Length: 122
Image (cartoon, rainbow, N blue to C red):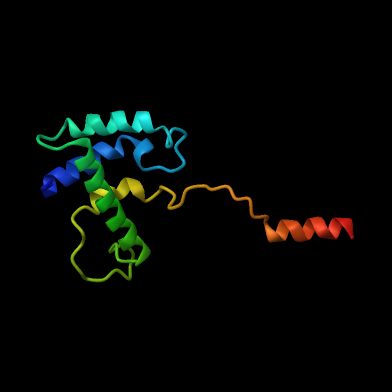
């Protein structure tokens, strides 16, 4: 499952056309069937690569990007280090505006809201 740098750039480009694969806020993000069909379509663009190969490589690329972003090592801004820039950085520019976290629901009450409710009844 070796991807060349050109293959990785092509993979990122193909994925960028399908926000359902990377945008947690997308309305169809949880639609597994739709995502599976897209992965098969993407894999068909590569010779000798399966949809699982593409998914695995994408996860690795995405996780590396997130790690660099979290550690502040993306090489952007005026205080950027004079280090080698990750070759896939430009190919992943579509991720800069995507939220990091999924929206979640919790059954744990919001303490601030709970305090306000208590004050109302006192």
